[in-house]
Structure formats: structure tokens, C-alpha cells
Amino acid sequence: MFKNLAIWLVIGLVLMTVFNQFNNRQAAQAPMEYSQFIDEVKEGHIAKVVIEGRALKATTVEGKKLTSYAPPDLWMVSDLLKYGVKIEAKPEEEPSLLMNIFVSWFPMLVLIGVWVFFMRQMQGGGRGGAFSFGKSKARMLDEANNTVTFADVAGCDEAKEEVSELVDFLRDPSKFQKLGGRIPKGVLMVGNPGTGKTLLAKAIAGEAKVPFFSISGSDFVEMFVGVGAARVRDMFEQAKKQAPCIIFIDEIDAVGRQRGAGLGGGNDEREQTLNQLLVEMDGFEGVSGIIVIAATNRPDVLDPALMRPGRFDRQVVVPLPDIRGREQILLVHMRKVPLSPDVKADIIARGTPGFSGADLANLVNEAALFAARSSKRLVDMDDFERAKDKIMMGAERRSMVMTDEEKRNTAYHESGHAVVAKLMPKSDPVHKVTIIPRGRALGVTMQLPEQDRYAYDRDYLLSRIAVLFGGRIAEEVFMHQMTTGASNDFERATQMARDMVTRYGMSDALGPMVYGDNDGEVFLGRSVTTHKNVSETTMQMVDAEIRRIIDEQYGLARKLLEDNRDKVEAMTAALLEWETIDADQINDIMEGRAPRPPKATQTIYPNKPGGSAPGAAPSATAPA
Image (cartoon, rainbow, N blue to C red):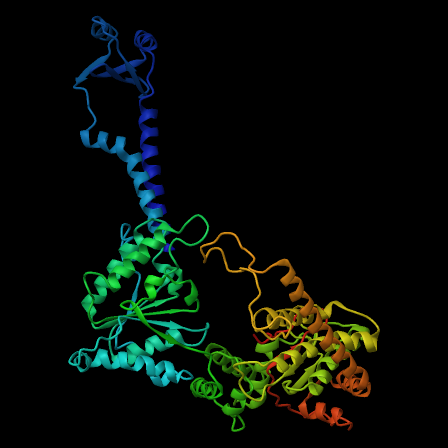
């Protein structure tokens, strides 16, 4: 910022100097009319005149300077002598050639300077000069500064095994070459955001002790066509000088999207950059000792030429961690946090299914922040529980004022979800019900699966639909009203039923066949317009089957709540008294006993909310 300010100050000072010079010259050369000059001479006011060509520089008796220009007058000198004027003659002064050139070209030079300045700003000036558009923006991390190893990466053992031979090749290439083996030129890491793809790539470089070039896919593409291709060439030239080395391209989908797809064709700059990348990876000049590692969470949009053998010929899937992987990730992030003896990483891992590595790192950080706010010296299990609730449901909104009727309606709503969830087969156990507003929700029913799920059967999905309807049915049966709080429940239940019929083949009437429209993004596919691949009669059958599933589960949930009115009333009373009840209290209510008082410090390990809250969408995602 200070550099830019200094440049503008210099430009301003130069302009002011030139303008002042012009103004001074114009003021000094303001001429007097020749006739008036002669009158001044005749009246005896002029004491001395200096003649420079046709210019007359006079000095009055009072010492004032005057300037005039004389026409061809043969009697001017005699007239001046006649009236006693001293005369001095000098040759005419001509401005220097250099000054004339400078004055005439100065405006153009200023415009060129301003243009160069703005071009440097648009092209990231300050890192290579004004015309370094084609220079690579890759940042090199040498082996001395890269301390990340495989010990710092947890939760993806299979992915580490896949890339471990890259380390062996970079350390000892002859081990593979003497048997005719060829190491992959490119490795594509695919996984959800936050699963540790970038960290794994840095660990490969740290283990192999080789230079590591890091760049984002968006760093290649600029507004000028050809700049990205030049940067790709420059990046590989730098890498060849440091070989063996690793080039890591994060978010490669920014530059590697399928060519010629979308409305109006493709993007010339991005496609030229991709073409150059394809040539550098597997062209006539093969690169040796350079391994290109790329990461993306959108492999479906990448160009097929990028995925063929010889380029990114190996795909490494970095999935969401399982329970053992989550425990290992937690142990890695807990190294820097002073922990209380009651903290058990395995219990926390069991209560966080679906969390990525980034989510778990955030969980540990939030727990440390909660402990710091309470002026604790150690982070205990209660801090982790509060951090988990905040991440999954949002921060508590205890300052939110609710009327008694709204609070009672919320309690019945969540009790309806919980009772149906406890009575339905193959439903995840209920571990917490709360009517404390959190995030956008006024209340949440949370369920914790006993183990990680990778597939869902028909009975489980039907149970989920029935649980989603429990909140609205409880409002109708016990409050005799309908609120907007069940809108998200209906959306999720309808979508789940539609997927069962159209995608999963879980309908006896329609059978194992996919029924749906072409709902792909037009920018990724080859067709601009969508088309239906089913008839109107079939779609009517699909709608009827979805209607049947929803009606059956709605009627089943209503019967369960009407047959267990006492349990719903008892749970609602407990919620109105304590605002939050845990699994033990829920079990007491379902077994007909009075719920035990809440613990001083509850340690509950919720998963995803089992239903929505009135007036807001819950922080839950339906199984797919």
C-alpha cells in the first residue's frame, strides 16, 4: 500500500512541476502591445531595452520589467536613442532540443506509466515485474521447511498405502526402473471437503524429502488468453530444475473442467491452460522425476483426457473417516491441547459419525475455546460435548424470548419425534431432546446410530419417514393446531419417499427401475435442455406410489402417538421443566417411570437431529 502511495505522489509532484513551469513561462511572457510600448518610450517611462531578435525586454524607470514584440521597424532604434533609452542587443535564445522532446512526450510517458501501474495491480504486480504475466505462481516448499509426515495424517490408512510407493520411488527410483516398472505421472486425490487431501500431499513431500510446489487451479486462469498456458510451461520448467519433486494442484476442477461443455461453448483461456497441462504431463517431451498430485471434490466434471492413463492414471479416494479413523484424527489434534483424564477419544469418535478431519479439528478447537472461556486449566469431556452441540446444532440462543404457547408447542413437537423414534423398528436410538433454541432451530431431537452406516435398507428409511411426521402429528393431536415448523420435515420425508421409488427400486408396484428426469447441470453436460425419459402415465404411477408410502407412514406414526399419549405428555412435561433430557431420562419415560433428575454435568454424544423444530430447519441431513 505504501509503495503504491509513493508512486502516485511522485506522479503528482512531476505533474505539478511541469504545470507550474508552463504557468511561469506564460506569466513571464505576457507581451505588451507594440504601440503602447512606443508610447511608454515617448513619455520617458522606459530606461533600458534588451533586444533579442524581435523580442523587446524593457526596464522602466521604476525598475519594472516589460516585454513586447517589434514588427519590422527600421526607425525603432533611432526612436529609442532619441528618447534616451539605453539599448542592449543579444542573440535570440532557443529552447534546448532535449527540453522540447521532454515537453512534447511527457503526457504520453505519464499515460504509459499509469497503464503499466494498473496492469501490475491486475496481474499481481510486485512478484516479478509488470510484464511477468506468464510466470508461475507456484510456491515451493523445500525439504527443510516441510515437517509434515505420514504420522500427522490419520483416518485414511488405505489412501496412505496407495501413495506410499510414490515416496519409495522418489527416494530410490532404480528399485522400480530395474524391473521395468513406471511410477504414475499423476495422482488424483478425490474426497469430500476437509478429508485431508492437501495434508496428505504435503506428507508425501515431507516423507520423500523432495521439493514441493503448491498451486491452486484458479491461479492459472486470468483474463488474457494464453497467460494460463504460459504459467503451466513456466511451472514445469521450474520443476525440472528441482527434479525429483512434487507438483500439487489444489482444486484442479477450476482448470480441468470438461472442454466444450456448457452454454455457448467453453472458456478459451481455461481450455488452452488445460491443453498445455495435458501436453506437459504426457507429450512428446516426457517429464522425468516430476509427480503431479491434484485434489478435487468434483471428479465428475473433469475432462476425460485428464483422467486417462499416462496423465492422472491413479485415483486415490480419501473418504470420510470411520470410527477408528476419527479416533486417530482426534488423538493427532489433541496433542496440542491439555486434556483432563476423563476425556476419551474413542467415545467422542463414536458420537461424531460423518465428521471429516477438518470437522474434528474444529471440534477440538471449539472445546479448547469453551474451556478457556470458563478459565479452566484442562479441557474436559463437558467442553467437548458443548463444542459438539455447537457444531452440529448451532450456538444456543437463550436470549430468544418465546411465549408459553410456542414453548409448549415446541415441546410437543420434539416429544412426537422422540416417541415415534423409540417405538419404530430399525430407528437410531434417541440420545437427547432439547427445546433450547439453537442456530435456526427452536428445538432438536438427536439420534445416535450404534455404528457407522454405509447403506440403508427399506425398513430404516420407512422408519425415518415416520419419525419425521411425528412432530406435526403431535401438534395436531395435543395442541389441535398446525404450525410452519414441520415444513422441513415434509420436504425431507417427501424427498426420501421419492428416492425410494425413483432411485432405489424399493417399490413393489414399479420395480427396480430408475424413474426420473435429466436433472444434470447444463454447464457440465452436453445438452442444454432437459428431457423426460418416462411417460406421463408412469409419472402418475410414481406420484401415486409416493403418496401411498407417505400416507402409510403418517398413519402409522399417528397411531403410535395416540396409543402412547401418556408417554408424550410425560416427555413434554420433562422438557418444559428441564428444557433438555438425555437418553436415561427418555428410557425412564418410555418404561413408565418418573424421569430421574438431570445430571450436574451431562455427557451426551448426539449425532444428527432426528426431526425439525417449529419455525426453522434442523441441522440434519437425511440418509441417501
